[in-house]
Image 1 (spheres, rainbow, N blue to C red):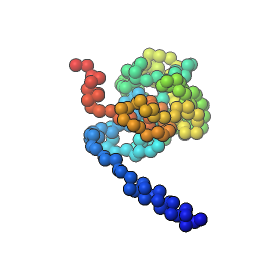
Image 2: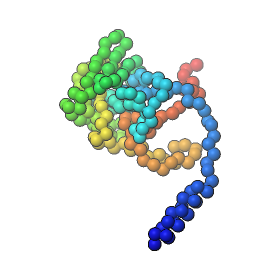
Image 3: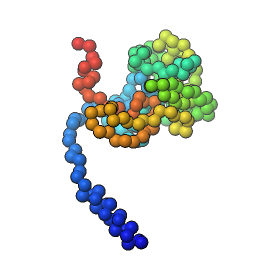
Image 4: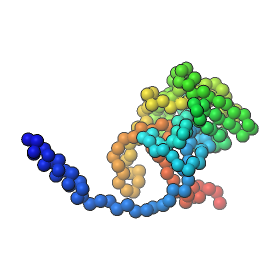
Length: 208
């Protein structure tokens, strides 16, 4: 019995080794790497990143780890509706999230305090999918209120153990090529843990 299993395993491995290999074709060069710790706010251009299951990170910066929502409805706030958000400078280092606006005013959020307070809120995001996060407190929410001219903004801090109803499941019609059939977990990014675009696409969006 062991001999039969060994032979079968050998045949499987050999068939994988002998199967035709897909040819890798260069399609471009990575020119910029950016990490956006707070969704829709100004990102950080970096030289290198660590690639993990939830996306890219470097040091204390994790991509789309924080999200802004309306405190009453739970609806997420993005630069699509509030372009001024891209003026917000955000940094996460040594357990502190620092958010600054153009007039020099800034707020520091001690992330250990956020975890210890454990105020859980639910966000409704892209395609009405929902995910939970920890409320980062009144001060940082008020800073967003001031910049955006709205009321009751809350900033959420992603935690992997909280509810996340936003699995990333690629669909065949997303691209013109076959895509892997797999399921990924994402923080607060839209659709996928890794987002890639081209310079030509960005130029097409810019007004002439």
